[in-house]
Length: 180
Ligand SMILES: [Zn+2]
Ligand SMILES: [Zn+2]
Image (tube, rainbow, N blue to C red; front, side, top):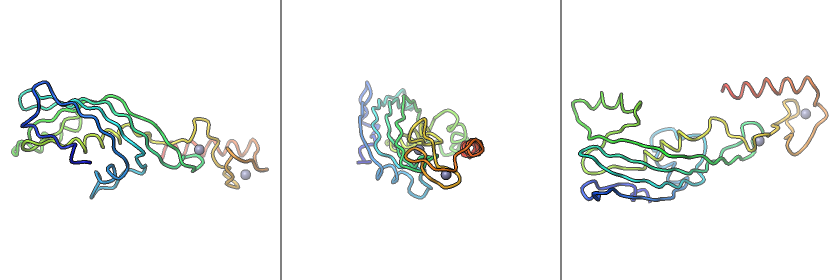
């Protein structure tokens, strides 16, 4: 549950806290309460985190492995993508006077603020999932997409309107999709 990702700094062990967890889409969507959630759904996320501190500064280092799904941007069939990697995040205590300045530099340096004795890993992990998600989901690297004329899925069928001209238009359509 999400509550297990709240860490009480008052009892953080001297040599750091190791935390492993797995979450799914319900948890992920819940992290965006009030905000627009990403357009993909989370199949699963596994993270292995080490939380350490030096004075008031908290360091989160982790390894993320996520699977996410969305319709293929070429053929519109479901596409599941694996992504992840190592990440590092630094948290400093929130100071009311300089809170705004800190927040500004925070985004550039992957630094955040915490208040009181607790930090919540959930928004940090969700941010990492969004960061590693691809801009474009493809069911397969060589997905042939849909025929721009009749809409047939060219991975599973063929149609009679395919020709050199159609291929050129399809290429143009792909470029358009990438820019979007
Ligand atoms: Zn596809
Ligand atoms: Zn066709």
